Length: 88
Image 1 (cartoon, helix red, strand yellow):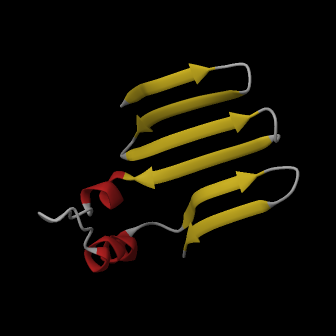
Image 2 (cartoon, helix red, strand yellow):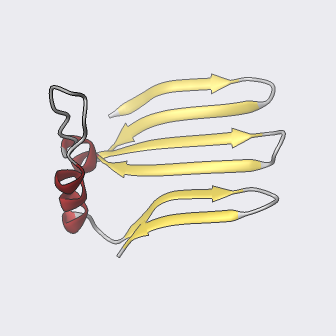
């Protein structure tokens, strides 16, 4: 657990951290007033099966979603739109 990346620039701030088995990515973009939050359980990352041709086994990846708790995976908020990706 801990913070892996922290970038503070004039136009954006980015933070990548891991806590309690979840990878968090938080991005604030000043120009668009956009905020992106990603909460990705490590089980999803562990479910990535990449073969010798660099192809992802989508079926294996999607099967990890069956075991995730309900909640948001991605939220994007800006002046122009709001987007939410979640698991139920």
